[in-house]
Structure formats: structure tokens, C-alpha cells
Image (cartoon, rainbow, N blue to C red; front, side):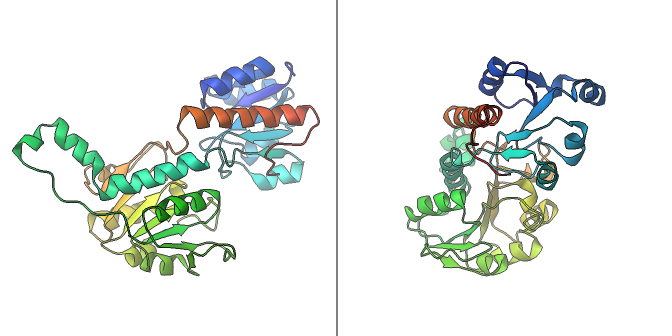
Length: 313
């Protein structure tokens, strides 16, 4: 397989890079200053693309690579891949589900606790020496709060199970009712927000879910409600979120993802009722290595004529 050209779109994992380089002719797209020239030079040797949540395979790239056979995503999300174009051209697509579910769900609970209990501020309070001047302000309890989850897939379900351990009633919205769960279903996101203290975004990003949390949803969540996003940045209308937070129309937000990463609205930096993370939902050594193994395993399976491990297309 050493002669098979694999195009890696951006830096993702040194472990993944090493594993790919051992097996394939690895081409690092981000190191090429003249990308159009590079693609023209290698268009007939690249048979696989490895992308992630930031860079995948759009229609232009797919058209530029006539020998492309498979796109293997180092991510569970597929919004950076033109799935329609892949289907049209018979290009296989894989992702990395399941292995990152637990980490992302853990982080969602961590964000809730960090936001409600003001953990980041507490840390700064101690480091700055302010504790010597008096106790920190009282915060908000998590246990028993109603948690509304947008998207009850693998990650949403894992978040629900964790929140149940805090005695939280669970509500959810999804495209269809889940007959095998006892959680309360709401037919619209607005209804869900109106009946939740904590609103968690955990659905895939599609044309239908882009800005699924808009001004109407934020107003329904209300001045005491808080918003958690471990899905994708464009799930939330970021401009409306800034307005809702600065005007006090929602109680707070904890965000691992943003609409135009790595750019974050500067208006959020000075707010105390906001927790901001740099898209680290799956960012543990164990999970990133497991994701890398899936990417490599899918490529090896494809080029060996075997069944893909995690096929999408």
C-alpha cells in the first residue's frame, strides 16, 4: 500500500500522521503553498483523503481528484464532506463514531458544572489572591435541574445518562420520537427550551440544524436558562447569542464549538457567565488514538477489498 497516495488535509494527530506514513504515500496538504499546482501534480496518485471537523472534501476537491476512492474523516461530524458528490462519484466515506462518545459526553457535563458552579472564575479567584479578601460569591446548583437535549443520538444519550446521575429530569428534541426511552419528547426546539433549565446541543450539523438555536429558542430558554454546545458552532446563531448574553436574556453559555473557528466573538471574552473551550470534545490521548486507528483501519480495509469498519457512504 506504500504507493497509494493519501492526502491529509490539515494537522490532526501526530500519531495518525505516523501511522499513515508507515502504510501509505502520505501527502500533507497544509504544507503546500500553491495548492492548485500541488493538486494538478498529484491528481492521478491521490486515492484517499483524510479530513476532520475543520477540513474535509468539498465538491471542488473531489472534482480535482479523479482517482479519489475514499474519504476517511478523523471526526464523527460529516459537514465538511460533500456527501452528495461522493455518492454521485461512488466515493466511499467513513467517520469515527462511538469511540469519542464518552469523552464528548463527559465534557458536556464538565461544561455544565463549570458554568453553573463558576469553576473557571473560582480558579482565577484563588490565583489572584482575592480569597484572602473574602469568600467567593454563591453559585447555582446543577443537581435536579431539567436538562433538554437537542439530538438524542449516541452522544445525546450518553449525556442524558450522565445527567440522570445528578437527578436531572431529561427532555429531548429529535427528528423522531425515540420509542425505547422514557425521556419526555418535545416536538419543537422552542418547546424544549421553554421546559428546560439547561439546553444542550448534541445533534449533527445539517442544512436543517444550522442555527437550530436562534433568537426565538434563546428567548424561550429565558434569563435563568443556560446553553451548552458540544455539537458544531453553526448550530447556534452566534450573533444572536452575543446579544442574548449581553442583554441578559439567557443566563449563560458554555461552548466547545464556534461558528467560525478558530475565531470567537470578542464580545464573549469579558462575560463572566460564559465558558469557552477550543473544540476539545474528543481531545484526550486515548480517544484521539482510537479515532486514528479507525481512520487507518478503514483505509486498510478499503484498499484490501474488505468491508469498511464505519461506513457512511
